[in-house]
Image (cartoon, rainbow, N blue to C red):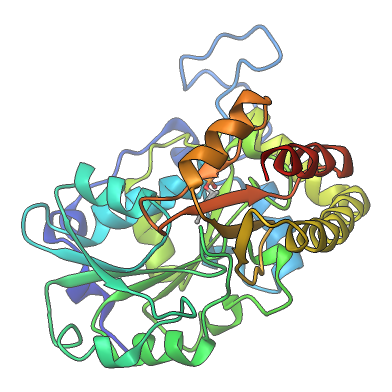
Length: 342
Ligand SMILES: *Cc1c(COP(=O)(O)O)cnc(C)c1O
């Protein structure tokens, strides 16, 4: 077990956090004259700073304790907060495996933290032989592993993730934004086993609430307290908390949409397979495909000209394009447009 305190920035350990009105009194009954709120209106009161109703529902769904859950303004907030808890700007480093999600890079740069990038192998898996020189680098405070990985689509091998959890003196963040589309298991069940593990999930993808900005981190209560200590006091609005609670109360609809997306995904892959313009389709555990074409810029431009927008990933993967699975009709429009190109 790692000593987490040794990884935390000393100013954060010493920090006296802001104590909001709802920190000092959290009961729900009474005459509230403590927060300078307007007494009139429907959304006049500050929201619950710790999102208890939402966390209670998540705790039941995930089979974890409430104090192992952090809720953020999207999981992108968790990524930024992790840099601010663990990385001294200009000194510490973070590590990730490329190609991967661009926010790790941006968040690292905003926080003036060097992000080391180790290439994934041909199957987009972690190659353990590339880790030898990094294991002993005490300045690496954070390791980001995206699984299923964006933009490649594949789950990472669990044994490689556990190898890193066991061998690095770092916090390891597993970004599971797409886990609900995958057949493999979430690693949330490992948060008791590894004191340095944080698992991020989100309402933005499979739950269909990208507009609401609600993301989660699951970890031990010590790490969760550190994230709570530095977050903006009311980081998730009441409207957004309500939307997430409603989604969890309406699981049947969510499951129906998920099922449809997964069956459309199979149809889309079969259709893409038949097109000459598509040179390669990478295996996907997510709701998108990374494909390779001969001339990605030309294919992208020709699709845009037909009002179909996909994601150019050519800087990450040569001639790589990322295609999100849409509705049956949207996918059909894409296939028709691609046929016009080839
Ligand atoms: C979409 C995505 C997220 C989601 O971020 P939110 O801030 O929760 O919307 C996180 N990680 C990855 C890899 C993603 O692709």
